[in-house]
Image 1 (cartoon, rainbow, N blue to C red):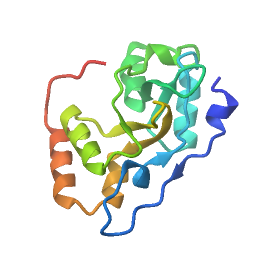
Image 2: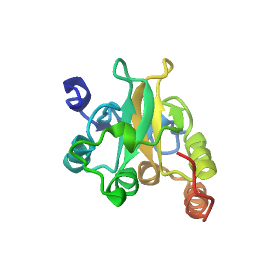
Image 3: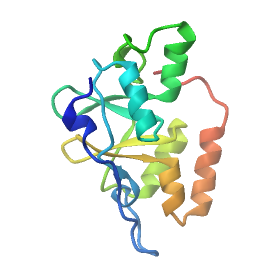
Image 4: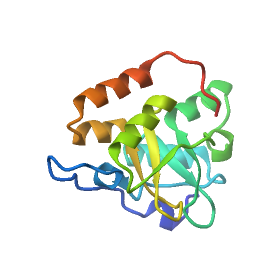
Amino acid sequence: MATENRTESKSTRSKPAARGNSSTVKDVMTANPKTVTEKDTVQEVARLMRDHDTGVIPVVAEKGRKVVGVITDRDIVTRLVADGKDAKTSKVSEAMTRKVHSVRESDPLNKVFQLMSDQQIRRVTVINESSELVGIISLADVANETEKDGQLAKTVENISEPGSQKKR
């Protein structure tokens, strides 16, 4: 099961930068997201998603907070449910996405826009200078806090473009 220090941490939304200032990732990210390890069950992940109203949970190494993947509600449906696998016994490692795109908490929001557009993703993990997980930022976070309407619209357009199926 997800360890206490992983599931007991409180997810918090950082305060936005004052209007007119250049926002950074730290200004709009959700800090201290819930996490799991590869050995946790998919049922435990689903409960965390339900209890914390989220569709993504970062997967971290058993020791420390190094990101080794993410698991999304879509991962669970397409990699387990569709194949008739049991969420009670299936491990996170069976369904998670291993290719993770991260930004640093000090990065400008423009970097998030670019990464989301280039990779056609809606969520990005946030790491500190030691490459440890400190947060997560979603397209919705950026939409709620930014004044860059043109950039946001372009990012959404790029994410929504039909493309080749991404490798996991």
